[in-house]
Image (tube, rainbow, N blue to C red; front, top):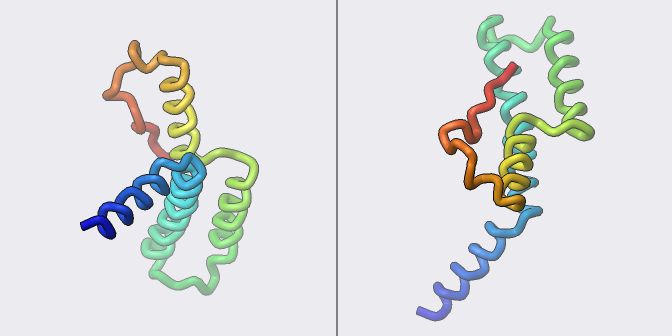
Length: 102
């Protein structure tokens, strides 16, 4: 079906767009920080009341993403540079995207 084929081509075009990928990975970095905050709340009875310091830390962490790359975006950029420079030929694939949270 030509209609389905055209839709797939358009979706593929969107997925290959570098802006889409960087925006998606930026969101993953933000969601990762929110997930950490959620776990902190769960460990502390799941109540937001009295967690002002934790909330401020989350907001500061999200604000920092405006000027500093998160771990996933930084890794993506490094891999993109590696691919562009063809230095990926000598890279060890088992180390890709293995950065851990601090």
